[in-house]
Structures are given as structure tokens and as C-alpha cells.
Amino acid sequence: MKIALFVEGSTPVGSKDQCARLWNTLLPALGRTSVDVVVPIGKDAITNMLGLPGSTSAPGLDARICDARRTHKLDPARDALIVAWDLEPPVDKDQRRCAWDEKIGVYQGIASSPLALLRDTAWAACAAKAATQLENLRDVPPTGRSQRTVKAGAVLAVCMEPMFEALFTHDGRAVRRALDLKDDPPGWPTGWGPNERDPSRKLMGPAIAAIHRMRPAHPVRKIIRETWRNAKDEWGEYILRKLLADETQRKLILEHAISRRLKNILPRSKD
Image (tube, rainbow, N blue to C red):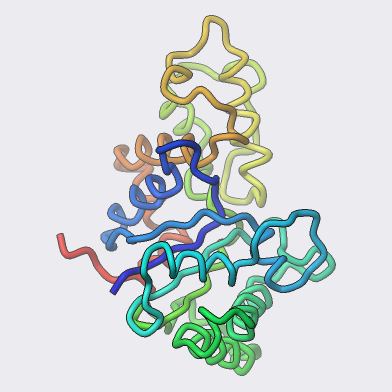
């Protein structure tokens, strides 16, 4: 069984697929198997699949799934799909922010896709069943543990709350150490912690911008030359790898809600 992960992330530039490196740095640390296929998507892939107002011509998520099926020779009866995206900002800007609703929407979009390579597949059937189950459980108190796991023909939606970057932005001093900074450079952001709903824009963006303004240039710029906006996955993988080497920070990352969710649904590593 192959596992294909469609995840909100940066499109690879050149030969370096930093999104795949990022996720296959995190998953082994969780004691879970690496994924075979990582497909970076923008949130517009979801909005376009659902026919929501948007300003891009990006292929819908269902089209991306069909492309991956062809490229990676995925078998809907044997292989599994995981779709992961950030709750912040919401997929549908006109609706309330709700992970439950967003997951139902993604499942329904996959289940009802008219595309031939997805229609009437095990993936479409699994997505339809998952949408119905979620609707029926709407008024049931959450248990905090997913009852659905990766298996042949499965489709699993993971709405990351509040945002993937929250995994490593709970401690600004730890991020500073990971970047080999002794003190806060001018413009270093405040407000680090688990309650920031948009750590990408409000914390990581300004932090990397502060490093770019340093003179002489900080040595990390020889490793990653781009800004946060242009290289989120590369910066994220670098920082995550450094934090995982710190026992205290590693524990915080592995106990985060996103990490617990991934551990619930993914198979254990065979190593």
C-alpha cells in the first residue's frame, strides 16, 4: 500500500522537494512511516474543487488526485490518500471557521467529483461514507481520538488546527536558538506561544525577515537564501529538525494536537 499526502505547502522549486523533506522529517520522529508521495497544494485546490469563489486557475483537489494517480501509478483499491490543510484561514471565507464543516466539504467534493479517474473508485466511496459519518456525529461530543486510520482504499481528511507552523512556534527562544541567534535581532516578533492562530504570517514571516535584514548576513542565509514566503517548507524543515534534536522541544512537538492526530491515523514505522 502506498500513501499519498496532499498537503498545504510550497510547490517544489527545481529538484529540491522541501515539502516532502519537511513531512518525512516529522513523521519518522512520530514513530510513523514516511509517506510515498507528497503533493503540495494550495488552499485554492480545495476551493476550486468545491466551486467556491476564487481568483486562481489552479487545478481542483480532485484533479490533483487524478494527476497523482497517473504519475505515481496509484491504485484506488490498494493505496490511501491523506488530505491535510490549515484551518486558518478558512476554506470558505463566507462561512464560520469550523474544521468539522471543512472536512465534510472535502469528503463531499472528492465523493462527487465527475472526473473519470476518481468517479466510482474506492476513494470516492470512502469519502462519501466519511462525509455521512461526520454528519451523523455532529452532535456527539468529540473523543479527541480519530476512529479512522490509513488502510487500503482510504481517504482521510486532516484539518490542522490552528496551523501546521504551530508545531514549532510555541517558544520564540527555542526558534531563535535553532537559527543560531544569541539575541533577538531588530524586528524579531513577539507573541510566541500556542494561542497564535496565524503563526506563519505573524511570527515566522517577521522572524525570517529580521534575519534577512541582519548585517553582516547571518550564516543561515548560505543554507536558505529565500524569504519565509518563498521557502516556507525549507525554513520549516530546517527549524523542525533543529527543535527535534532538543529533548524539551521534541516532547512539545510530539505532544501537539497535530502530531497526535497523525499518530492516530498513520501506521507505525517498521524500523
